[in-house]
Image (cartoon, rainbow, N blue to C red):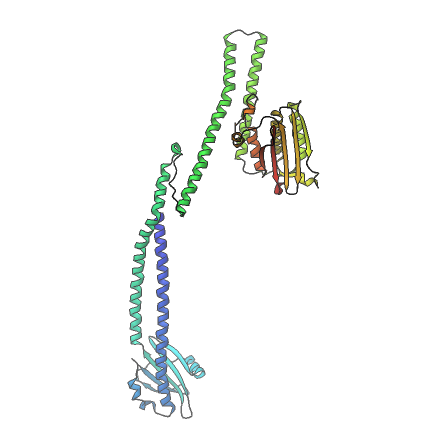
Length: 453
C-alpha cells in the first residue's frame, strides 16, 4: 500500500473516530436530558394524583385538571400500603411493579423506572387520611420522535463526514506527498556513474528539505569513501606492480644470458628483496583490512602502557641500532593504575611499535624522545623527533592509507603504518594527533581518556 493511501486512510479513520465519539456523546447527553425532563413531568403528574389521594379523594373521582394536563398515553394506578391495587386508570395498565420499586419509593418517596418505552414514577403517599402508592406512567411521544430524528441526522452527518474526510484527506495528502515524490524522482537519477548529482535544497526549513540536506551530506561522505577506496586500490596496485615489474625484468635479463655464480647470487638477492617488499606490503594491507572491519575489542585486559612501550622499543632497536630512544615521565604517577588501559596487548604493542619505528625512521639525528604524562583525567604519550615537518595539506591527509609526505621521498615504506595506528587507537577509545612543535620538532601524541586510562 502506498504511503499516500495509508496516510489518507489514517486521517479518515481519525476523523471518523472523532465524529463517532462526538455524535455518540451528543446522543447520550440529549437522551439523558429527554429522559430526565420527561421524568419530571411524570413526577409532577404523580404528585398531583397523590395530593388528591392524600386529602381523601377517591381515585375514580380524580378528573378535571388531571385530564387538562394529561400526558400522552398516561396511565395511573393506586396501591394501598399493603401494595394491593385499588384503582387503575385506564383499566388496561398491565404493568407489573417490582417489589424493589415499592421499597425504594417508601424509603425515598419517589422511585423512577422504565417499562418498555414508557417512563414511570412510583410516589409514596404518607398522610393522616391516606397511605399508599401512586404509579404514574406515560409515553414520551414527541421526545422520542426528536430522538429518532436526531439519530437520522447523526447517521447522515457521520456518513457524510466520513465521505468528505476521505476525499479531502486524499487530495490533502497528495499535496503533502508531492514534494516527497519529487525527492524520490531526484534520488532515482543518482547512480554509481554520477555520484556528483545532488538533490535540490531550498532555504525552506521544512522536514523534506532537512531530509534532502542530510541525503546530500550522506552522498558527500559516500563519494569521499568511494574516492578513497578507488585511490586505495590504485595506490595498492602501484605498490605491488613496481616490485613485480622489477622481478620480471630481472628474471628476463637472467634468462637472456648466462650468468656467473656471483651474478646469479646478486639476481636472487634482488629478487628476495622485492619478494620481501611484496610480503610486507601484503601483510600491512591484510592488517589494515582486518582492523577496519573490527568494530570493538572483545578480549580486553588491563595493560601497563609503560611496560608495553619498553617492549616495543626493544623490538624496534633491533632494526634501528643507531637510534637513541629516551623515555621520560612528565610527572610521577600517584599510583600504577594511572599507567594502565583496558584493551588488547597485541594490538596496542603493534601501534606503539609503529609510532616508535616512525619516530626513528624520520629522525635526522637518530634521537627520539618519548614523554609519558599520566593524570587522573587521562594519559598522554608524546613521540618526538627532529626532522622535516609536514605542510598543512600533508597534515590533513596524514592518516590516509598510502599517503607519504615529502620527507619520505628517499625512505622505504608504504604509508600504511599511521592508518593502522589510528584504527587501533580508536578501538581503544583513544586519539592520535600530529603537531609541528617548532621549526624542526615533530610530535605524535597518543591520548587515552579517563574512562580507558
